[in-house]
Image 1 (spheres, rainbow, N blue to C red):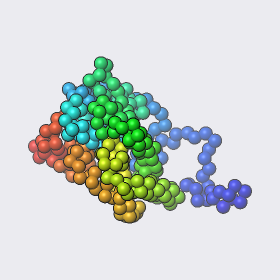
Image 2 (cartoon, protein in one colour):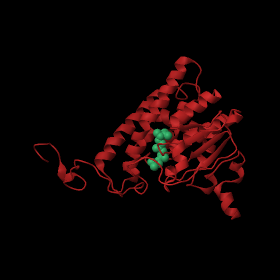
Image 3 (cartoon, rainbow, N blue to C red):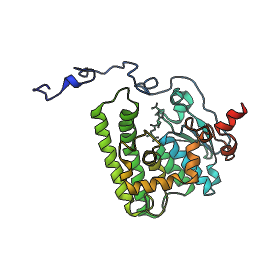
Image 4 (tube, rainbow, N blue to C red):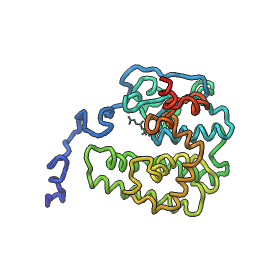
Length: 301
Ligand SMILES: N[C@@H](CCC(=O)N[C@@H](CS)C(=O)NCC(=O)O)C(=O)O
């Protein structure tokens, strides 16, 4: 420990490391996403996006942010909103598809999910999962309460999710599951914050069925793929580490949402891992769930 600064540089990684005056990119820093991460925006290669027949074109992958949108579209279709028919194309972020020129035109931030609505007078691009959920809810007048006070509460939770989940994914998930070595300081910092967030949700759900009361809304659709999946061990295998079973109201909500047919369908779209029968790499028609899952495709090959 340096008495003057109060800093413990010997425990730095590597020992004695102090950040230089100006940071420079040292290519591969290790970790699961090291090969695709880079400190600049914009396309790296020419690659137009495919475009299908349906009003909605989705370019995505079944990570929690992607699942929000496929669940939303499946919910809308289940409500009879036929204008929500969609083509879902796979964007493989481990291969750098998010840096293709066509994708960057739809999302300058190079992250899935990104969407194109072809039913407007000129195609409308929408990026950021929260903005996509709000756009679809307003377009189809569904899953967002009409009453101003309830709508405001719903949007507060939607934006809560957008601000909070990076601590769960980029913070806790990264250091607990993906970093090339375990760093107690980082894991402790983010485990503490994630447990605080789980407690926020648990207390809120103690006297209601869904995030905004009795109505299932885009707040549930946004929150479940992160916090609901964490509760049912769908991400990071961390439920034991975080003692998630102690959040009983949240657990009840997580299981109730997980049981929805629309959620089960949404989770399958653009999914490239797990059991083959749960992987629907691309979705262009409702019947694809019956005929085009990876188990069926591979058994024909
Ligand atoms: N705030 C964005 C976050 C999107 C995001 O982080 N997407 C990740 C997958 S979950 C991604 O595309 N990562 C690719 C990369 O970082 O290059 C949203 O909610 O849409």
